[in-house]
Image (spheres, rainbow, N blue to C red):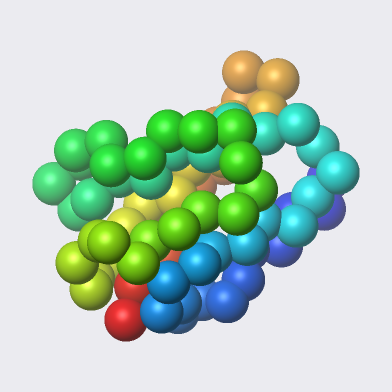
Length: 70
């Protein structure tokens, strides 16, 4: 399964490059859900700079990575 998340760190827009139909969740470091959507282009421009947990959900499986917003 090929998934590329870029740019990381990002200033505003985070792109998710995959042919899979994924659901996206982004949590802050306290575990609070910040974003939940089906888009492969996530706008983080209104969020505070910091580290976030990005979770991609595909076929009831969760893939987690960290994203830095600068």
